[in-house]
Length: 160
Image 1 (spheres, rainbow, N blue to C red):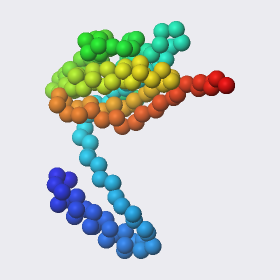
Image 2 (image 1 turned 45 degrees about the horizontal axis):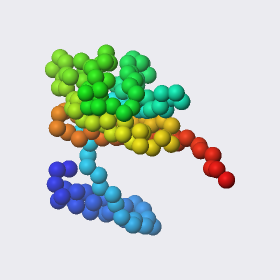
Image 3 (image 1 turned 120 degrees about the vertical axis):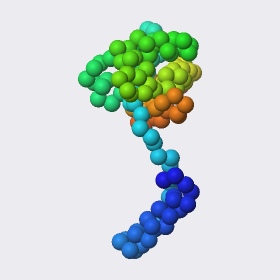
């Protein structure tokens, strides 16, 4: 949908159909979200090593991380240059840049996401693990989107 009027029309049609098919339904409201354009799935993660601290991870996401096992690890915190270096150190970097008629993705957006995760896990040592898969990135200038995320917190004993 490309306009507010189109969204309003879709809402009206949806409410009409609900009233016809499920007249007993009680609708308290709706939630409208921006439609996601296509992009490349990457994975960003962190695992806290007991000796070294937060280890950031990056690779292609979705099934590619399982099949290709093309991931790289860096100690947090990282700089922007180190985030870009993480991308460049994967075999899939050429895919990120664009190849054979496929446009590249927003490398700065991925680097920014890595830096944010780096800062988050440095600031909050209780985060044991963090996986964002997929982190969907599009062409340069588009906003990356977290489609799925999982976080595990460490258990701390409370002093009495």
